[in-house]
Length: 234
Image 1 (cartoon, helix red, strand yellow):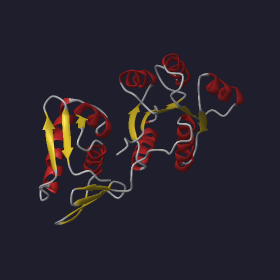
Image 2 (cartoon, rainbow, N blue to C red; image 1 turned 30 degrees about the vertical axis):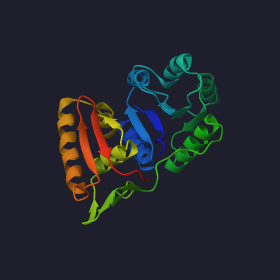
Image 3 (cartoon, rainbow, N blue to C red; image 1 turned 135 degrees about the vertical axis):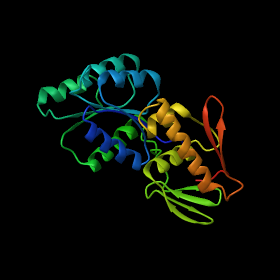
């Protein structure tokens, strides 16, 4: 199964950033959210992304500066700017900094999604966009990540947001290792000790939900993370 598209979202407004990240994840993207330009640069330096969505006015390092620094290392990764500015010179500066597209706040979620898909299609030479399927088959169970529903042989269960996000990542890495740090940053937004203990509790819950199918297992991979063992299927 193809891997979901991975985005880096850098937005200093925590409310807007959280809403955008939640919306994009619901649409099947893997999203790393950072709240200033310096954090954005660190995340970019440590990971590989299919696309970057950068706010312009940010503390420590603005979006234009961040984009220029990234362009020095990677001239091809797609970049979309989010900004409250609408003056022509600001738009021009954005494109000079390496933007592939530019959204002026306020904008609709649908517009963001359509522009994101268009930029990715152009970057990939109009190849089909790889996004998350409507559901995953996990052995005899069916998981709908958008509705956060898990239907098992013994019944249907509505998952919490964190349960659903964690199971979605496991499904996206089916029969491969889901790195612990990556899962923590995606679902909890950090990889500290307390979040790690919380994730272990959620892994135990998911094991319990899937325990009635002998073909399915979530195993610990020592020093790395977790692996969902399940028959291949979408």
